[in-house]
Length: 263
Image 1 (tube, rainbow, N blue to C red):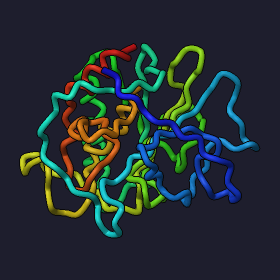
Image 2: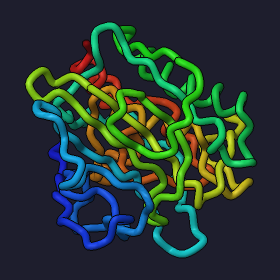
Image 3: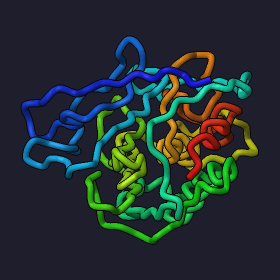
Image 4: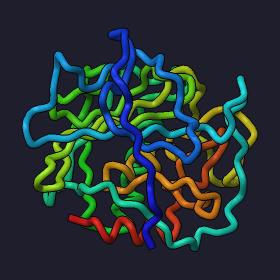
């Protein structure tokens, strides 16, 4: 069963530092969109998209918007929910190469732990369907999302209302990704937790790199956000929490969705 997703078209903004100008992005029912104060730009009238390419943006939201609160992690109770949403694109049949800007990594996460966590997050989707192929291509100096045909993973100063944002450019006619970038919010603390200590951990007070990355990379595969509380134990649930590791493991709907869009 496909879960109906929500789209939002962002109106034109008056400052060059605003984000998502004219770009459709997933939004939870009833609003909850983060404030438009991040430093990254997307498509602008001065920098339009090439013909045949469209763009979408996905904003991963905290389960709580209270100041200083990273959200409340809840243990898994219903990973058998068979819901998923499709974005309209898929990976190229040859797979996709990604690069990491190691210069943007938070001091609490070293290069090797970050690479291990990110590689594991990608591998989770390959485990769901071996046709979903990801290759590490080394480092990149890209510090912001842009249509440069380099699939970048980085940390940056994005809106305090977002845990991470994934920007997708895709060939409209073919439904294949042209370029994709994921930016983790450097305003928040980050860590790589030990899964042996449980799927909801109290310390440190931080987001788990692998947990959030697995969700974001679901958008690379071609899956949309889910916002029903029935789906809260699925990786593609649109809210995240500090100390949460539940998204590291795919639920039934995540696996069904991944198989439905495999190249």
